Image 1 (tube, protein in one colour):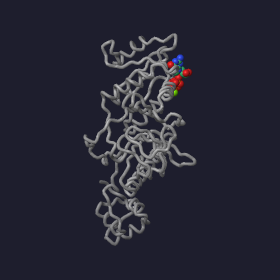
Image 2: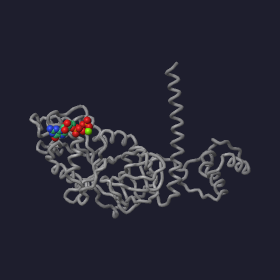
Image 3: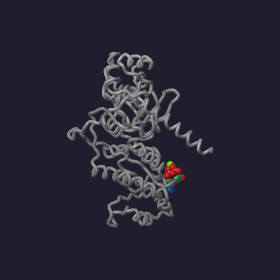
Image 4: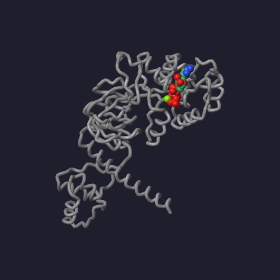
Length: 370
Ligand code: GTP
Ligand code: MG
């Protein structure tokens, strides 16, 4: 547990700091606004206002690990794999994502207007797969910088007429650092100059060796442009998922990661969340990074309103008081009071950090000018 300054406590209690200082004086404590208070003093003052202090109020953590309950093995159920597509510029990442989406819109949902919310789900052979629609590199770097791991499988797209290029290598190192299995999609097979053997040859240098050559890396020849090999690619994803056995408990309060977020003129802060555990419902009290609120409306990747979504589903939500960042963690709480307390603590901490950042920057600037 941590501490609060007089100023922070005043804010939490919605009182003037001077009033708190006066109360402390009555207790025989001379305090200034920036003075840190011990737990007993906080409880005394808060109790004076009829406010009960919960341990959570003063928890100071950047993620929600302390709130994560032990997962009960018996409660775990199979969940869809979450897939990111990476590869060199122009090798066909966007074309492949579009092609997969167009050929395999979630069954029973055909006809929905596709919305770009940063992720989508497809259904094949009765199983779902979640694709992150954000550029793979950005997803990995910003999210991993925030300690978030959202990807289960990486599709490495390599153009058969171009071979391994700098960003191909970068993608491999990102995936390896994250310990994420790689499936190679050898793209642009329709091209005259396609040379898949060369791609395989070049990738052996990175320990990506096809089964035919004694390795264990899956290679799938595709033409994203013509929609060739897409079914095989999806099959291979499901095969890896079967081996890795991705699981989550759908019967708990939801938690997961922000895929992207922005301020919408009409709707306010809008965030695309990837639910990683539990079920997210409209009305849930939620903390998202340093923002909080109640889930007001949820929209899926087809632009449809939904009331609840389970593990590995991407969903766009409104109802937050602020715009979170990609890679932020989110967590639903039992009641709005707790969500608000935790959200406010985080906001204060963020403001403090920003203040520190600003002063650091200006000091650096000063030195630069000298
Ligand atoms: P960046 O986002 O700029 O890194 O590129 P990207 O990897 O998303 O590539 P994109 O999907 O934009 O494709 C680049 C070009 O290659 C486009 O002109 C596509 O039409 C073309 N292309 C993609 N896949 C194929 C394919 O399978 N065959 C052929 N012939 N062209 C393809
Ligand atoms: Mg692209």
